[in-house]
Image 1 (cartoon, rainbow, N blue to C red):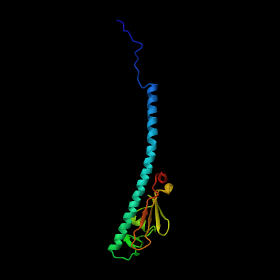
Image 2 (tube, rainbow, N blue to C red):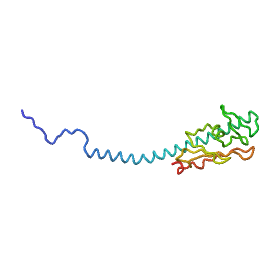
Image 3 (tube, rainbow, N blue to C red):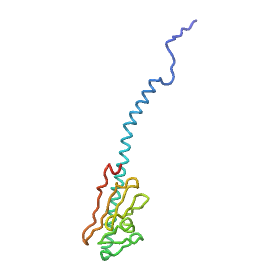
Image 4 (cartoon, helix red, strand yellow):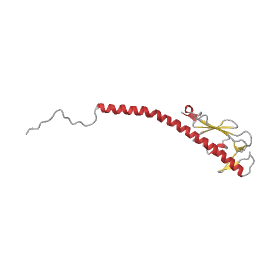
Length: 159
């Protein structure tokens, strides 16, 4: 008995060149779409990190103020927070590196801490993003609260 073989029926294994090219094009399109979104996530993360630092500054100042009030200390009397002496000015922590950064729990490996002036303290995201920053300003008069600014938290500054 003779067997007839159909020469047009081939047993193909693997992918054809066209299938591989289609897959490569699809991966290229997906990566072109995803990479800009990933870069934007880094900027958003940096802004969120700095908003967290701002919240730490606010809560640290409020906590230091409440300690001073509960201990019935004078407005410019230093307080002790977790074993560290925090100098105070007009009822709130000073801008010294032993002042508001200690009260807020901010550390230099995570942030760039700068005493901008006698009354202004700046926290930056990192050395490469110095303008992506928040500020704390000590009140100049007794009885007034400190001021805070997150004006530097823009996509342009934090990119």
